[in-house]
Image 1 (tube, rainbow, N blue to C red):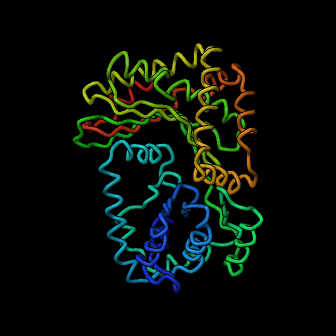
Image 2: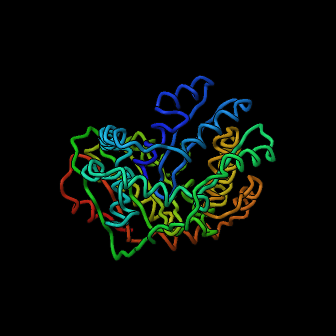
Amino acid sequence: SHFLEHMMFKGTAKRPGTLDIAKELESIGAEYNAFTHKEFTGYYAKASAEKIDVIMDVVFDIFLNSKLDGKEIAVEKGVIVEELNMYKDNPARYVGTLFEKLLYGDQPAGWDIGGEAEIVVKLEQKSFVDYFNTHYIAKNTVVIVAGNINPDDIKAKTEKYFGNIRNGELVTKLPVEESQSGPKALVHWKETDQAHFVLGLRTFNMFDERKYALGLMANILGGGMSSRLFSEVREKRGLAYYVSADSTLYTDSGYLEISAGVNKDKAHEALEVVLAELRKLKDKGVTPDELQRSKDQMKGSLALFLEHSDNIANSYASSVLFENKVLTPEEKLDKINKVTLEEVNLIAKDFINNNLNLAVIGPFKDPEPFEKILKI
């Protein structure tokens, strides 16, 4: 998936090479790129609304007509390997990959999105063509356009461009298998000046209506400079520069995660502080004032988020792709507003437990000292 995403910018019959695509989009000042997530790949371009025909023509052309040239594939292997190396040299990012490897193990949900270098260098053209023809099909595709546009006009243009889109049976991913009975730790040795960790707990999937309560709870725990973790870990003790909490939800699994970059000599102390906050959250819950502040914060953040047309497109894309519906901002705010104190506190009681998962990058070799303190 990820390698193919790169190859889509390597040329079509109409635009034979990478520079032909790049020059056309950059000549109108467009922002453009692509991304691969665990469950979907996206291609995007953003430009002045009057240039909508140009960016639709380019994006649809690469989606429908990319050449997937064998020589270009051979060259791009080196690019992919260097991208993997770049991420591994960024512990604040790479620790998240290791966390999912720990959480899900040897199944697609636990694999690095970019792949492993030894697999990347062995991929052949046929693999890309087969994947392209079986996954880049009508039933698997969503088109989102946001901005100062006429919806009927956009629909007509899309129907024209996609008149010859590939058809086929929908390919679904392998279901995630989960089981755990006790805490787990993964330690990745690296001679860093700072230790980076992700501590997390399994929760539920993106279709669960409790996700709004979970989001508010995560926000109270580590959603900003007024959050509990920021106050305890950074402001009071000076153990970290960054510390945060968030939830990640997929179509059939999900988790609550706490991320931090801490003083490497005080990594255990920082973890003890985080664990103490989780215990407090489980035993005592959140206060009415905290919940209201969290709701107000999320409302304000959503309003700012929606100032950008690309953010609107991204949020609508996942809703349509996975749920085949669009939740308007008003509907989303209504769901956030309706979350009760009892619902948030029940999330804390139900999901904060001893099935903790910890991934750490730093000058450490033995996971056992970390596993010993993973108790709620």
